[in-house]
Amino acid sequence: MDELDDQRLRELLPALRRFARSLCHDASGADDLVQATLERALTRWRSRRDEEALKPWLFQILYRQFIDEQRRSTRWQRLVQLFGAPARDAEPSAERVHDGRASLARFNQLPAEQRALLMLVAVEGLSYREAADALGVPIGTVMSRLSRARDRLRQLDEGPSRTPTPLRRVP
Image (cartoon, rainbow, N blue to C red):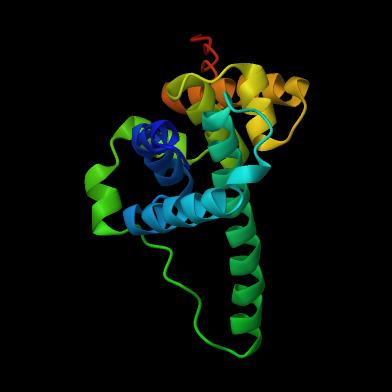
């Protein structure tokens, strides 16, 4: 790897960490994901197709690493349940409670696919095409998922819809 690419990788670390944190909800898990991403990227450095598309390529690797880890975790949890070990506690950690402002809590309620797209497009500034390439989905899927994610965030922000109470007639 030449020095320019090394510098570009260093510049992308904060963005990779933000994206990983949005997917993992855990700082240490996000750091592990970024490390695995960089390790995979460095071992496959020569397989890059487009020299200019480093950022989408790294986001693609990170997202695929996350999905693979989710699948492995699901398989292990089923195995653990089969042998009767208690399930993991679903309570949020103190760090998550501390860090989680109301907007982040709503954001975290979205499915991983929607969170990933919002992070890539709204936070990291990728175009719809770059996000589609990074996640390996068609551009139409990107647009529809973004629309659903934005609608869902709007619903969560506004709270449950209230139907007006009907007026009663007083005799």
